[in-house]
Image (cartoon, rainbow, N blue to C red; front, side):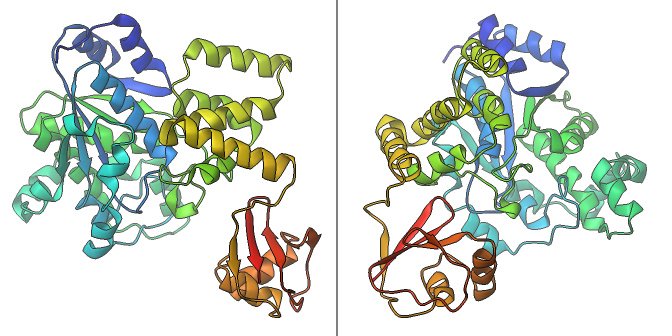
Length: 394
């Protein structure tokens, strides 16, 4: 496959949803030269699902792939065990090899929702990282100073308040940087929280006599609760979420996220996105209607037009027309109290969570808000949690 040098496409790759490019002029020149580049992205399987936040860089990877460049997708089965705390306010515990193995079972399939996976060079970084000994790690560590590491904002904050920073955490950037050496990356992609780790790849490549990679740093997106999307916070929209759940989660986002999601999570042309932004600014479009279009676009990407249309109809019927879904799950719980029903139907993970939901007024029985922990649930009742979750008691 010949490499495309379409300047309009190259410019969009370098600007859409991008926070920073290092070295921009060098990368633009390389992309314009017709040379086939090796474009690297690594993802640690610290949870079983790839979410839209991680999909931002996967779509950027797809853009490079469509130009004809070689995509290298690294599953961090070794780095995932060690743990990256670049975006964490406290030390991330080490995961077991078994946890990582289970988490990464479907990673390639999920990545294949975005990438042409048969053309991707898929690697696991245990291939090279497990072979390193103290001597080689010592040489790598000599390329960095302790001051380099503790100057990072989140590490600095933790040290200032007396939180523990383990020596293990100092090793992570070395490992990610060595990944770039192992696969001979020309370009590496990552989010803004990965900046130090991405730059370490350039340092490490120079140490091993390779030309330093260029770096494309993408913006982060916010999750359903307004914080950075993160599996550890449970505020994610996952690529494997069922259509109605994906659609509903997008509809639950604040209006302030609409344009950001159009930019980072859809393939809608930027000219159209700019029109949407202007319409919102002028108040000439209802944010809810635009969010409906956004939810449809995102759901369509992963579940095709049919899945998106069914999800939209479900949302309109359930939340706008306030109808109870026809296909809700049934549980034989009649006569039990509401706390037991919530736990046994899995609307709550524990009795304490069930009581918290009741106290918040988040639970309804047949359309009536229930706050009493002792409420008995009669036969043929519908329990509703929040706006999107229903079960029937029989």
